[in-house]
Each structure stands twice: as structure tokens, then as C-alpha cells.
Length: 184
Image (cartoon, rainbow, N blue to C red; front, side, top):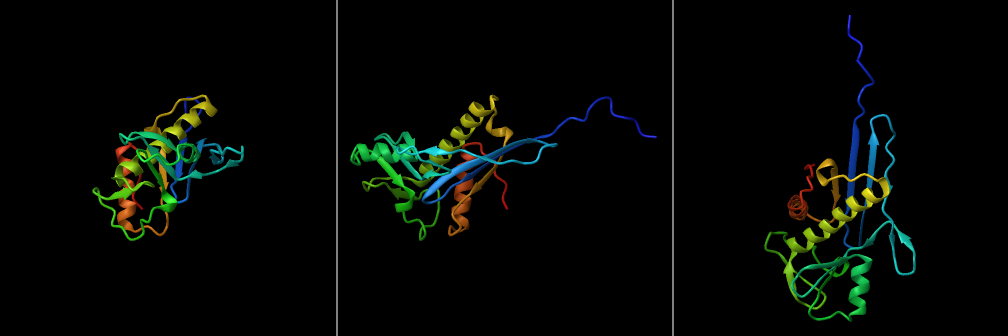
């Protein structure tokens, strides 16, 4: 009654990247599977100076005096410490920034370690951009296949004590980077 397929059924591939954005540490995991495979998530491991591998890196970001991105995570912390917290640089250690009592808006500014301010949306967007770019590069380098951000389903976690305005704020930062997140 029904016709047999002309060949093997096509396999559906699933590409997922999950960014865990935290106040102290951040990282990501990913999964690339076909419909016939069991999902096997993989993590990126970061290497600290002492050659210790960790699944997360400090949520620290460094900008130069023109507010241009310099580095993120262990590298930002190391650079900032070696430069003795240069007063011209913008170093943000999210574990030291109090965001609990702030209303997240497009105009919110946060203070760097030296007291200078930047727009929070720019700081968060650059942190997410770094994690996004690092994930895509890492996956390409380890899998031998270059994929684009639009080929992935993105999952973004934020600290559980953040309110709805903070979650919306992070969605906006992600959208600026063409990371599409679905609202819960």
C-alpha cells in the first residue's frame, strides 16, 4: 500500500551550545549528534597558569582604555594582575560587582575595578561574544568542521538570583550577537 523509501532515511543533526554565565565562573558545553546517536554532551576545559584544567573560567573581562575587548577569564585576570590594575583599563570581575539591587536597563552602567564605568550591556555582550566565538572555534578545531552560530540551538543560563529584568537584559545581549534564545 505504501511506497518504500528510495534510499536510507536522512539523518537529522542536532547542534546545541549551552553557555553557563555565572557571577563567579562561566563556561560552556556542547553536543553535536545525529538522530541515531545518544546525546553525549562535551565541555570545554580551561587551563589556568598552574596547568589545572577546569570546566569553568572566572567571569572576568578586560577592556583597554578605548573600551575595546582585550581578554576574558583566566587570561583577563592574569593580564590585569600583571599590569597592577592599570587605571586606564576597564577590568570587571563579576564576582565583585553587586548587581542584586540593580534594575537592568539599556542605560545601566557598572563600575570597573578602578571605579571607571561602562555600559553594562556592552560588557555583558562582549563576555557572551567571547564565549560564543570561543565555543565555535573550539568545536571547529576539535571536530574538523566549521559551523556558524545560526546552526546551533543556544541555551543561556544566568544566576538564579537574578530577576526578570536581568534575564531579559541577557537575552538582549545575546540577540545583539545573533545568538537566538527561546523565552521559557
